[in-house]
Image (tube, rainbow, N blue to C red):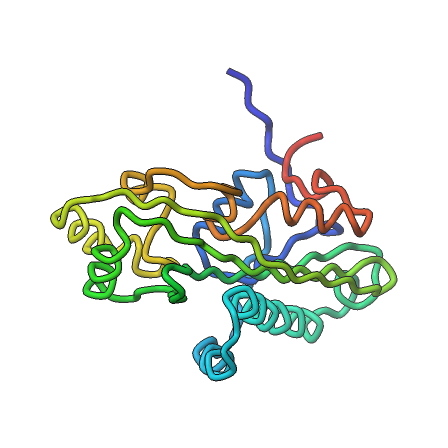
Length: 231
């Protein structure tokens, strides 16, 4: 079995992941990218409260949160950089920020945070279908300092299985779903309890590779230029 040897990331072609999500990092690494990880400093609760007061729909909510994360990280990079990347050099920096929430029965939910809330949600959502809505905000700083931005939401239908009460409690107590939108993961332990999806698998993990590819292609950028593999 042959493997593709890894190479050092090209500093002139870098992707910055504006997230602390292990799943999003895993998606990029599995797709050949070793990103710079830069978690954003954003008051998500304040943004959510404002949007809910306005009656914003699911797509608007996740896109606005993703935009806030991208802006925070892009601004921090601009302040830190002294040459190249974000201030008009010859390199290309792409900042990717995302936010996911689950839409079921007209109710939008994010991370459960506690075992008790995870158990409550799973008992409500088992055997049902829901939409995982993921907002993406992508910013590219091109040679000469030109900046391109795009914001889009991707929706994927998730068909939840029917785990027993004991399985739900065990899953919640594992800690795995506590920091995940919709209280589930598609990979690892959560894979036992997802009967299927309709849509983009990578978006269920929190980051849509096809959307990012299409966005970068529209700006004249090939995703393969960012791969951390020997070519």
